[in-house]
Length: 200
Image 1 (cartoon, rainbow, N blue to C red):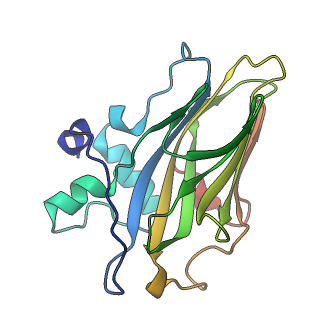
Image 2: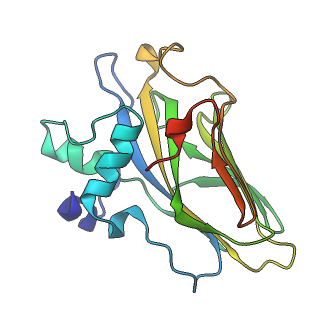
């Protein structure tokens, strides 16, 4: 996977057929101080991504199509103000950012996780994410830097998307599920209902 990641291939989704499998996406989020170093998925050992997928019940390495295996993990990077990452920022007001790690066309968000141990959030910052299936389907987020605009919020996440035709409410997490909530540098936690949301 390291070679695939090095190629920085972008996923081009043209919709999904009913027979298509679920997809796992490595997601990166970084807001604020660029001097604070937090590694993104592309810089980690490939085994870390595999372990994250397995934590959510999906085998990222089990794909007979090498081209699809290469692109499955990657999404385009966006940049808006102090933000860099794979989520789309939908609205920004001062140091407050609202957006979504979007499911591709023809897919619906199923599950998501966050690497809390490998992330960073400054005192006075806030980062929260929940499953959202109305409007822009995906893992919605709210992020806010401290009032003075300093600090950083930087995390690795993973989203699992399933073809809309194969979406199963009894397998996928409910709409509105809070996946993570980080309030400053001391209180950062994944879902109490779905503890596997904390990627380990």
